[in-house]
Image (cartoon, rainbow, N blue to C red; front, side, top):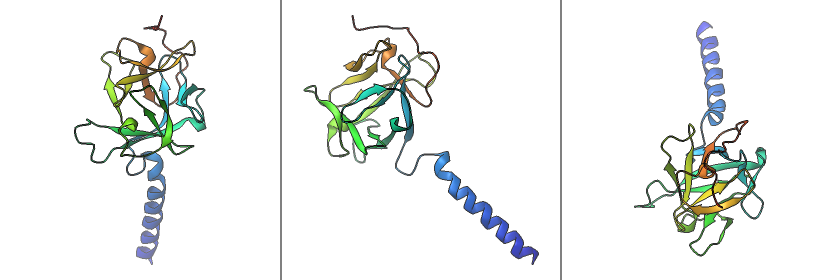
Length: 173
C-alpha cells in the first residue's frame, strides 16, 4: 500500500509539473513571448490593423517564431501578434503592417541587433526586407528608421514596462 500511495504522489507531482511547464517557458517553436516594450517610450508594440506603440496590456502579447530554412538569414524570426495571430511585415517600398503569418514571405523576417552598453536586455528590432529598425519615441512618434544603435528609441526588450522611460538619445529632428 505504501508503494501505491508513493506512486500516486509521484504521478500528481509529475502532472502538476507538466501542467506548469508551458507557463515557465514558451511553447515549442516559440523563441520568446510576452510584451515587446520600448526602452524610450515605455509603450508596447501592438495595434489593430496597423502597427502602433500603445499602452502595455494583455492585448500587446507577441511571440517570436523561428523561420525554418531561412538559410543565410542569421537568426531570422517572425513576430506574431498573439491577439490577432498576424505577423509584422516591413517592405522595401515602405509598406508596414500586420498580415497572415507566412514564412515564405521574407518581408516578415526580423532579427535582433545587439546594442553595446544599452539598458539590460535591450536590442534593436531590424526588418530584414527593408533593413530598417522599429522605433517608439517618448513624444509619440513610431515607425521604422535607419538602424542607429545610439538612438535609444530603437531599443526594445521583452517584459513588463519599466516605470521611467529613458530620454537619452532623442532623435529625428
